[in-house]
Image (cartoon, rainbow, N blue to C red; front, side, top):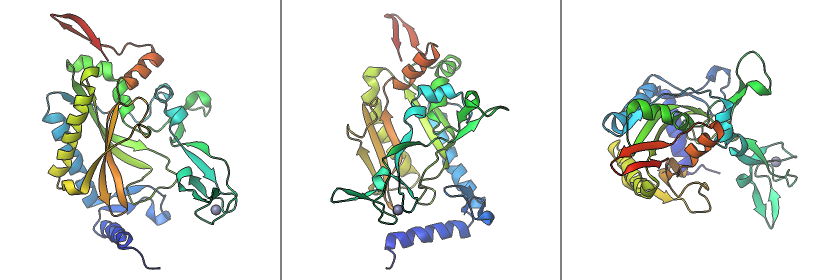
Length: 306
Ligand SMILES: [Zn+2]
């Protein structure tokens, strides 16, 4: 069977990236490690240009955004409060015939019978959750009390430092905190070159506002982000702002858009723009018992918002 033009195009991109020194497979001389990549001499410049441009337009050119740079390892309590320890997982199924571990959505169903896409076997386990966070230990003892995780997203350090950043930056609502940094996810099936990797860098902005302005800023940021991609040379025809329907959206979000790009391997999410309500700050306020409330003195008296 000949390969589809899209698959051929993807293979061309991957080999070009290697030949020109953009991206190499991690630990290549030892056979590599799946889902991990090293950026070569040109790749590191490209990536740095992109990060610098993002930082310039999202932080330096704005009065309402400040930056921070949080640690990758954090107190385990953060991941309990955020819900990651309990729910940041994909339901997985094992094939007893070929031992493949599959995400539930990869299992084929024919006439009500579940089948392994690898070997066609029908002897599959029931789905069970597989946590995507890399577990590690802090300090000399490897027991339950020293467990933490490599962060699976950069957002949580922004939320837990909200009060400190607010106080030192003397910002008033609405204002945002931006961060660029590494994040890690133990993907079961890393694929599509660097698109689904186990270690990657995120550029993240959390923008804090009053509840009544949430939906307005959702639309505002969607447009800002689409403009960003246009400004780095991606045409709007290749982009799609997909409104995530109620049943797919996180329960705390009142509105979410996925900005998708037309990749050779299909329409895939480049970034999400979501109104997350006060869910994150409330979770950390309740779990830490430290106030993360926002107070403002005005001639109308004291108003509070989270
Ligand atoms: Zn199988």
